[in-house]
Length: 372
Ligand SMILES: [Zn+2]
Image (tube, rainbow, N blue to C red; front, side, top):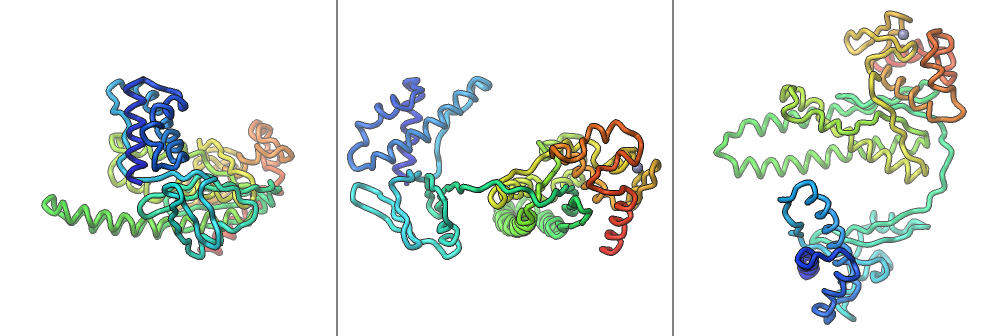
């Protein structure tokens, strides 16, 4: 692995010095000095990796002429898919000509890898991990229904086209994050070393805990086989960074649990299980407009009231309904969203999937009450 890293850095150096951009020429420059004792494929892979890094570097240098040339610091190794072999929970990786290392997988990994119809790609090794990329042929299924998901500070509220509400509570993540933050804030500047260690330790724990909660939620959602609609959060974390005029506390709260991560997980799992992706909708006004008549709403104690049509429901459910309604505009045979928007007549505004607006609203309100 160390040698591999050295080669990658060497290719980068050659590439910059001699201003070579073609992969083939990079390889020809390198080949004579390394061909003995190295699997040819590794040289190709090193060139491949270095070429990608160089390409990115040329792009950055256009914007910032002082950018540092890329350099790989961590040992790693990319193994081409045709030179490793997998058999009985093990992987055999050639090192030098006629020399191999054999690594075995745990039962979970081998279960995943033994699924039918997998196509394997490159494997990447580091000192303590191995990742094997694979793709799976998935027949695109027809969605069994539609769900809108509103992700707010405390939870992810989902509503489907039959009006069923499901809530994934994320407050545990927020609570534990707050606790850790408090513990860490008790240290003074002098404890920098201890503080750093603690931060790493808590950081790892926190990540594991958050990941397991998010994995569970995303799996449950994907397995319903429904088409999922979510807000396009594009850059939400950027929005709440330092220097945007918001207080530290406010920022902390908004970045409290990783909505972006959950979106990525849901999207990935929906593709894996159902063969279709999540659809993203414009987030503007989803939490400030009535989900029946699009009038501006009044909020009191987590509940919203519409001054126009009198809708009175949980604010997260209202937002989720707005997201669902926006998402339905993607669906060809559903009621067209634009027509819904222009009309001011309540009867027509209610999308047909919600059958009867008021009835549905009451049902949701009851559901919410039952939950509390
Ligand atoms: Zn209304």
